[in-house]
Image (tube, helix red, strand yellow):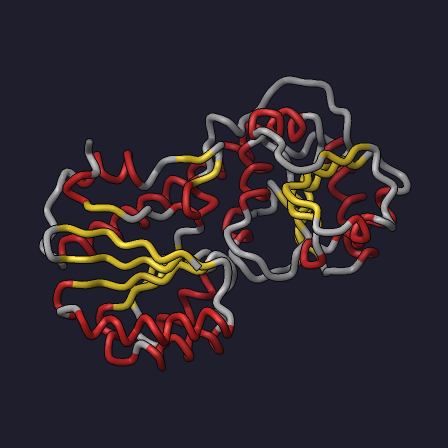
Length: 319
């Protein structure tokens, strides 16, 4: 869990960037809630931004811990369902999906020969469900761009033409994506899901399983097929999408432009939300410049700190 703090004079915006919110992190949050008594509650704001899906069970635990700070607590979400739950509890929130902030100048359409029928970008671990590709991998060319390989066991049932291991440069990832016809993302529960956004930004249609986490925010019948989380269902979806490609029913440029338009809309919501919090705290700065320089920036193609701000003194952030 990363805790970032933006400071402006005697005001603070405290941002919790979490991979997930689990028991040990709840203990950390409990400890920090006690420290908040040191501050004037009129001069602080608290933002929660879990990277993975935040369900109602853990939301209730957060609210219990931060009960006395409820009026100054905010949430930045990836999935509209998270916002629906938070709206029920009358919590201020915004659905951004940090994948909106990927660098579209790195992930774009290139005219190149197709080497692979499909590509899967992601960490090689259990929750990515590589096993659902077992039937497809026996008959088709499949590339895997592995950001991190936790165990080769997750790939043992696959016959893969090429596995690309850790530390692949983003520009190289873009080349590989453009050499594929389809992008896979098969996890059941995730978060912003940069891989899916990168596929769309490169004009690839996507095969996704039903999921929690928000990647569906960018899907429609013109860029994806969403199926059940079984090998048979994934195989059927693959056959359908390959047929559509042969029939010319997917337009890569439209896939990309639709994604960019949706991403820009989410970015605008994020910008307005953050600015409103600053105004509440009577922080008046050149916000457009601030947002461009310190929020909408990248680390090798993906947004820094999951698209949120690093700690620092706001007054010194234009240097």
